[in-house]
Length: 557
Image (cartoon, rainbow, N blue to C red; front, side, top):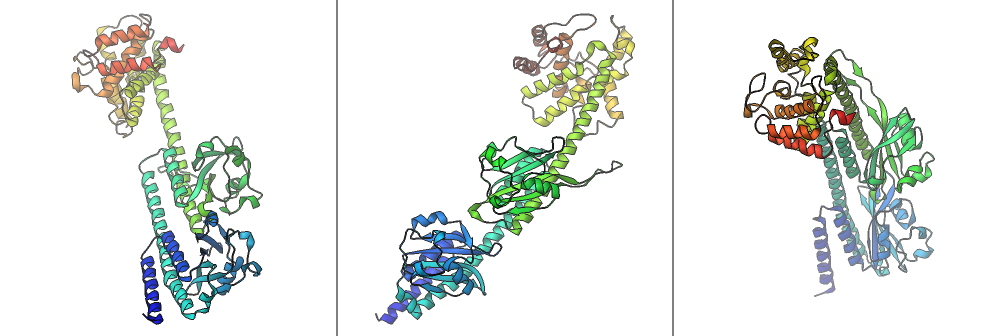
C-alpha cells in the first residue's frame, strides 16, 4: 500500500469515527469523544475543551484529557479574553505556540495542566457562522503536525464537522430544559387547582426551582412587619435542615433590598456586594457564592359579589443560590424564577385568605355552639367536648383528614336545634313532662331545619355530616329518636357522635345527678356496645382515652 493510500485510509477512518461521534445527542458525551479524537489525530499528550457562554462572555471548562490534576477545573470558568485560549478565540483562527512559558498570552494563574511540562500548545477556536462556540487546546503535540497542510486541513475539517453537532446537542439540551420547565409550570398550576395545602405547594414550587435552575438551594422569606423582620418560611436543596427559624432585619441583605424596592437582583459574586448579609451563612454553615433574588408580589384578588378586592403587595422575597458548575444566572433563569415566585406568592395569598375564612367560620360555629351552651349552664362546654371526643374517635378509626374535618364541624353543631327549645324546658331541674320530652326530642329535627334555612346543607364542605345532627340520638336497636332508625340505617358519623355525646353526658355534672368517673362512663358504653351504640366507636374511644386524648369535664377544671 502506498503512502498516499495509507493516508487516504487514515482520513477515511478518522471521518468515520467523527460520524460515529456525531450520532451522539448527549452534549457531555459528544464533547468528551470529540476531544479524544482530536488528541488521537494529533498525537498530543493532553487536551482541554471549553465552551463559550455569550451571556457572561466566559469560557466554561468542560473536558480535560491526559492530566488528572486538571479535572478539578471542570465546571470552572474564565473570562473569554484570558490566556492563549482567549487570544485564539478573539482572532477566530487556530494558534500554535511552541514555547508557552515565554508566550505573553500564557496565563499561569489558571493552573491549567500544571502537572505537565508544556512544550507546545495548539488552540483551535470552534466557530459556527462566524460566532464562537468553544475552543480546543491540544498540548505537547509534534511541531511537524502543524507543518503538514493536509493534517491541518483534516483537523479543521473535524472541528467544522463536529462543531455543528455540538451546537445541535446544546440546542437540544436547552430545548429539553425549557420543556421540563414548561411541564413543571403546568404541574404547579394543576396542583393549585387541587389543593390548598400551602406548605406542600410552596415546597413543590421551590423544589422545582432548585431542580430547573440547577442551583444548590432556594428559599422563601416573608415579611413580619410587627417584628420588623424577614422570616425564613421555607428552604429547599443543600443543608435545608439547618435553614430553620432564620430571621434578619427588614431592609438588610440582598433579599431585604429586593423586598423593599421590588427589584429583581442577580449577584454572581456576593463577596463583592456590600448588601450581602453574612450572618445567615454563619448560622447555617451554608456558603453563598451567587444569588438570584426576586420579590414575592401577592396579586390583587377580586373576591366577587360585594366583597371588593384584596390589593396586591410585596409580601416577601425568594432566593436561588449557587448555580452548579459555577455558571451565572441567565436571563431565562431570571424569567423562570420570577414566574415561579409569582406562583408562590399567589399560593401564599390564597392560603392566607382561606385560613382567614376558615378561622371566621370556625369562630362563627363556636359562637353558635356557645350560644346553645349558654342557654343551659349545666351543659356549658358540652358541644366543644363532644367535638373533641368525636374527632379522637374518627382518628382512631383511621378516617381520612377530610372526613375528620367534617366530623369536627358537625359534632360541634350536633345540638344546634336546642336553640328552638324553650329555656323553661332546657333549664328545668326536675323531670320533664311527656309533652316537654316530646319537644326536647325534636331538637335533632330543629337542627336540620336550622341548617336548611340558612343554606348550610348545600355546602360541599359539610357533605353528609348533617347526619351528626339528625342521628346522634338514634340507637342500633331502633329505640332512639327522632326517626327510630336501626342498624345500618345509622351513618358512621351519626354513630361516632352518639358515643361521644353519651360519654360526655355521663361524665358531666347535671342538675339531677353528679358526674360519673370516666372509667365508669366507659364501662356503661361497653355494656351498650353492639346493642344500642356502635362497638367499634366505643373501643376507639377507649383507645383514645388511653392515649390521653379524652378528658372529662372535671379533668379539665
